[in-house]
Length: 488
Figure (cartoon, rainbow, N blue to C red):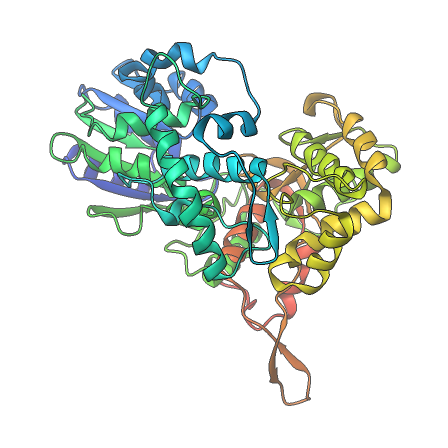
């Protein structure tokens, strides 16, 4: 296939040996472009994939001169294999691990009692957060913020208590033979990163660069002196900052190019995508393919329904099940099942170890927090779902999900839909508009508040998952928002 002008510009920059950041919008054929670059050179390359499935797919598309692996696979070959014994060790409850680290009693911070289980969980989460960073030591800012302890002073008290145990846990993980802490794949990746590794290659291709966490970014950028660096991704699809991901593309010291011709959808959908790209202040705008007929309008039988939240996905799935559909939930129902079981524990007067609900002693306490504390507002949909349907109904629905290949419709969050596409997509109603501002227009009506950058990026991901027809559904409010003027 004849390359587009943008693909040719990327090829020219690559063959000139330039470090390159390639902004590739939704459906613009970024992997195809990278594979073509690799085929046109005899140099040896490494392709770093976001996950194992992407790496496996890439191996079928890249020439044998390019090794396609995840960062974890490289780390395992270098160091991780030494910890195989610990990787395969049996699971143990977090409280047992905490006890081995010296966490033997509860503490009280503010008005909250933190039992030993909660402290042990917080310690292990602190180590996990540290492993996603480029930092060399465990410090206060790695300690997760717990529901009910959002106040800065209270969090500082928690961090002062947790950090010594987290450092002890990290020291425990250095032993390849045995230890109290269960060894995970992120642990050997971090251990490898701290050795300042040198990746033997003439060029490195980092895919989904907008989702790289700081530890992967550190490893990648450290190869600059001996290898050509090429990162590719879409800054507008950077939607994982809440779990430590960092968009490394926009500040990259190298040639900045773009792929903006989408082969997935037509001009009408490109216009819709561009509306959200403009709101997100993204570095690219998309052009649709004229020969791909993509329409916007109602979809009565969608192939996929995309939701803002896990709880929204559960509500959609339950409605579809009640209507007689065979429903698949992207990623499975484990996280929703865990939330329902945690809710049931609280309703029965038992504490739960679920990290989102761990500090609440009863369901009534959680209801009050979700209703009246601004920090708990995002838990209100969960409370409403449980109060409306009950945990048994939710658990029954989870058990009725079928594999995607057997489903009439797939329900997914926008996060889990990233990288995927369907013929007919409907946006669920939990994509709510921003709250009204304090200002009014000439007729006295309240002016809607600004759209957050992160929400615009998530909406962009959601609307670009379709090939044939998109039902804007829960995002239709954009038509009446001051920032929602169509972009041409």
